Length: 235
Image (cartoon, rainbow, N blue to C red):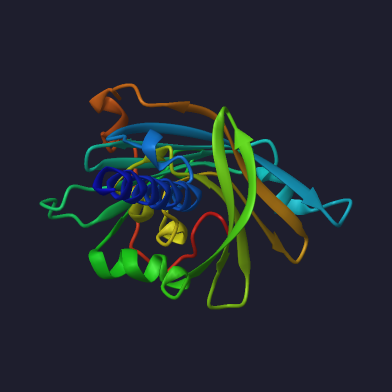
């Protein structure tokens, strides 16, 4: 009788643990595959769907490329388009020149703008109150399972996001402040503005070591401009 009771108890316990693991797996969404990626390079292609035949400046971003480089605490975001080539470098905490620097790399008038901690916060202020609504919709991008989320901004705009938690980086949300509330790496996002819709889709992902030269701020041939509260490049 004792043996039978013990067998029954183990059977119930086994059933309970099995259900618990299944429930956790449904919430974590491949969390067991997650790796902390201290080196991360993601290149996004930029596509514009315009409501107008001639979209002026907006059209110059169509077909562009945005690349995010992260290695440890070093980060750089580089935008290449017909309009301009521009990089944003996140500077080491000990750098006396500021927290970030915007570098316009193209054209005759090349310049650098250093941002203090307060400047960087002001530059990204529209994301301060961003909230995330997570959905059950999912797609696969470059072999990574991605979930859909909606990021709501304080100006009532929203960004549709597809992210994976199979990749993770501790400063991704600092590099791209719009995604602070996203628990993973964004591989696609899109938003609408008055003339159309812009989408950014990951075309290449690498976790290989990044050469230190990528994070060196250019020093020759650049004028210095003061920060004027300019909006981020995605506007």
